[in-house]
Image (tube, rainbow, N blue to C red; front, side, top):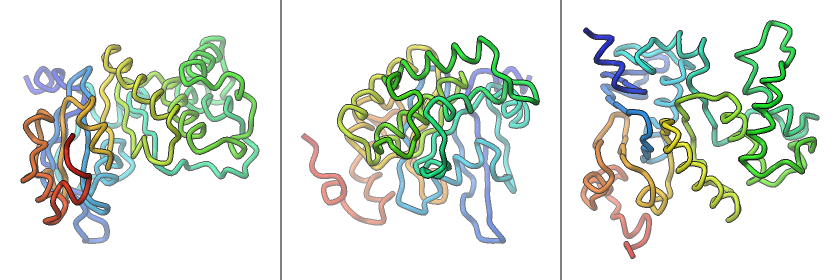
Length: 254
């Protein structure tokens, strides 16, 4: 019966706790997301957003609680490359001589053999992903020669090539130019229509109100969670950000 319940959700986190050397980073956090939902994750720096991402990807172990992805354990999700994570600070040295094509191909590593010899299906997946982020003419450009927005698109293409059903994005709109911001917004809507589940951390309240179906407010635990229209209240935002009013933090609503 439990597996049937879990199958309703792409992401299910139940009462999860994470601590680092005895210091609590996240406690009793709960989250459920279905296919085709876009959820914003909002909180102060150090509130536990990255910790939650790390727990959902299996990068850190939870000290308590349960996580299921597509009704399966994290080990199965990792094996099947179900989750793609796009970090705020990309983990590849910009001086390292690796091209856009190379980075995007990394999204296919999980489906390759031990020698990582790309098949025709891998090559096609990479081509399609690069096309979707409008970087075809930069395919063989070293990532160190790209702008911040182009680099962000490269790592988003890597997630597309991976063909994961769950996308975790850490501050996807941070440090990008207007064309990239527009492209990312359009891609999110496409992902939603394709049935992908998106969880994104952001400080950009405009984008939260524009296209996030759900909103999670976090400060070491989940303070509020639900439909964006219901959760995005002055009281909740003020509580999440330590007593500062929404107008001070984000400006008045238009």
